[in-house]
Length: 150
Figure (cartoon, one colour):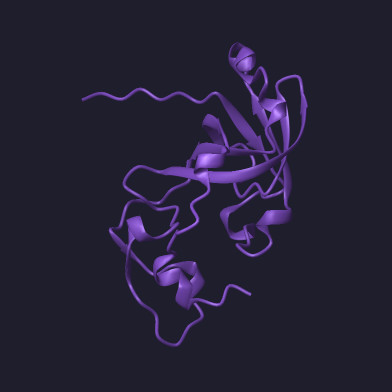
């Protein structure tokens, strides 16, 4: 099976390297998502949504281990290996990422957003609006419930 995915745009972010991204501070980071002109018509009505799902490529991914120690556990005395699909590791078999951002403004083909956690130049492959059915009241958070993120 062949799958063809091409970028529809790119991220403009204050982050210039993977090491600069801090998990706790990301919700306040302001950046832009530039949509290439041939996809601009697809932005019609997007400004009516407060939040957007951004699907992007970990273009600097370093491979695909199936078990990793999440960065949230790096400083713990008792580290655990977790299955990569139970983590947010950027090193994955298919280097895809999903981020929920707040849409602050749309100017032409550029979306100003809050909460971006991608580095400068990251390829964006899709955008979807955050809708009522995305909220799940009975969601469980797995092993992350054991971690103090503060």
